[in-house]
Length: 257
Length: 298
Image (cartoon, rainbow over all chains, first blue to last red; front, side, top):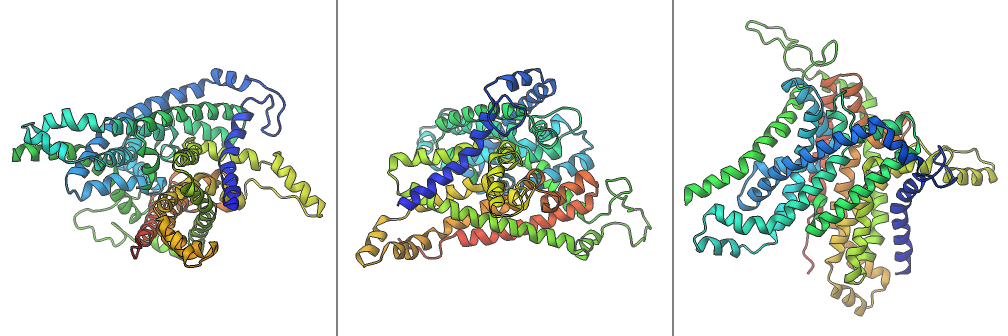
C-alpha cells in the first residue's frame, strides 16, 4: 500500500506541476519562463491591449456558442433515436468522430469544403467541423442518461393516453435536461479548446484562439501565453464544474464509450 | 398511433443523420476518392477526363499514390516509428496508471470520486497549454535542464538538450493521454469482487501471488480499453511532435499535415490518411476484441 501511495502521489505531481508552473509564471516579472523574479500583472495587462488576441477570443466564443448549440440539438435527437430505435447507421456516424484521430476528420473536411462545396474557409467551416465531432459527445451523454432510466415511466404515460409529443414534453425532456445541459457545456469546452480540427478548417482571415496560442508558442514565447492559458484554464474549470453538477456521469463516460 | 410513432422516429433521427451523412460520411468518401487521383500542377487535383470516347489509360482513377507510398521506405519507416511511439506511450501509461487506479479502487468510497476528479481536472485544460507547459519545463533555461546538465557535468558528460527531442515528444504524449488510461482501468478495478482476494489469502497466496493470479487477469479488459484510448490518438497525433519534437521526430500526422498544408499534394495526403485509418481500424478491432472478458470470473 505504501508503494502505491508513493507512486500515486508521483503521478498526481506529474499531472499538476506543469500546469502550476504555467500559472505561476503568468505572474512573473520576467520575459523568460525560467526563474521567479517578482510578482506582476503586466502580462494580463498586455493581453488587454493585444487586439488580435481579443478578436481571436471573440471569434472562438462565437464558434463555440454556435457549434455547441447546433450539436446539442442534433446530438440530443441522435441520443434519443439511438436509445429508442434499433438504428444501424446513425450510431456509427455519431460515435466514430469521437473515437478516431482528430486529424482524419480535419483533413477530410478540408478536402470536402474546398473540393465539393467550394467554400471559403472561415468561421462557418470551423462551426460545421466542430459540430460534427460534438454531436457524438452529446449523444453519448444523453443516451447514458436514458439508459439509466426506468422504461415504465414512459409506458405509464402512454397508458394514461399521452401522445408521443406530450410524453416527450412532460416526461422525457425534464428527465434528460441535466444531460442536455452537460452535453452543451461539454461541446462548448471541446469547441473552444479544439486545436487540430480548427487548424485544418480555418481560413486566413479571422484569428481563432487556439491557432493564436499555437502561433505564439511556435514563433515567440512570452509569458503572455501563460496569462491566456491561466484565463482559459479558469474558464474551462468553471464550465467543467458546472457541467458535472448537472450530470455526474459526464466526466467518466464521455471519452471512454 | 402507428403512423405518429413512425413520424416521431423519422423526425428525431433524420436531422442528425442528414448532418452526419453530409459532413462526415461524404468527406470520408471524398477522401477515399481523392487518394485514387493525381495531384494538379498547382495543388488540388489533376482534371479527370471522363469525356465520351476518351480512352486515355492515364485518366480517371489510379493507384499511383499507393504505389508511391510503398516505393519509398521513408514513409513506411515513419509509420513504423509512429507505431513505436504509440506502443511506448501506451506501455508507460499502463505502468503509471495502474498503481494509481489500484489505489483509488481500494480507497474508501467517499474519497474515490474526489481522487478521480483530481485525475480529470488537469485534462480539462487546453490541449496546447498542456504541451506548452512542457516547453517551459524542458526548455534550455529551465531548472530541470540546468539540474540535469550540472549532474552530467559532474560525471564529465556533455550537456543534453531536452526540448525538441524524441524524449520531449514521449513526455508530451504520456502527459496528454495518461487520464485515458487511468479512467477505464479504475472503472475495471473498482468492479472486482474483494471476496476473491480474501479467498486467495485464505488459500495461502501471498500479496504478490494475489495480485498476479487474481487482480491482474481480471484487469486485462480495462488495460486493453485504456490502451485503445491512448494508442489511437497518439498514432494520429501531429501537434506534439510539431511543438516538442525536432525535425527528425515527425510522425504520420505531421506527414499528413505537410501534404495538405505544405506541399498541397491532396491525393498523397489522402492516401496517407487512408493508411492511418486502416491502421486505426485494425488496432481498434484488436483492442475491442481483447477488451471483452474471455471467461466470466464471478
